[in-house]
Image 1 (cartoon, helix red, strand yellow):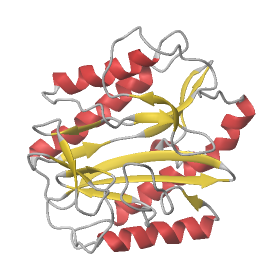
Image 2 (tube, one colour):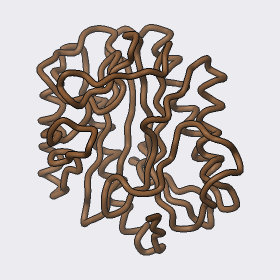
Image 3 (cartoon, one colour):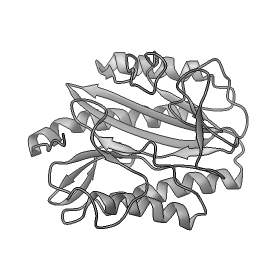
Length: 259
């Protein structure tokens, strides 16, 4: 069931959005060659405890997960693109890292993801990351009253194909509110003018993710991490946004942290 939030609800969601944005900014700043993925998870856990927030991941056990996730952040590296389960791995020079983080603050959830390279980047990795970011920006720009869900999906797919990437629609965006994953599903490709009519109060996570040379994925033996079928690298960008009469409100905008 698709739920619409009141203006008061959306205001109450701002602290969660700001916290998620702040943690991702902190982790990105602190991550370097040699950083261990388990240390990233521990640092995120520390920040959650300090804020009195609640992880959306640690006890999360959907049908596609082998067991409860058990960690508080997804750390996907190189050919891993989604649901990366933190493990004992020290990042090497040139590794492409995607961090996906969701928490509840005072009962309201925010969800966001960022991709970046530690150390010396490969041009093709920077192009892949930049394409996910442009797709996210294009999708957010279409998230206005009068448009439909298909317009958001179509905007993502158009940017992906223009960049030479294929699109997997098995996993995509979703409704956000009192829980992390709700209706509607927001595919990363679709047909403009189709689907649910965007209404004031709809809060969704939009999350384009692309792989360099394939759209096929498989699940790692850890039961969670999704990897490219051909070993090519992946990138993932995500924001939680609210549809308002004044246009899309990006609740997890890291650019607003100093404002």
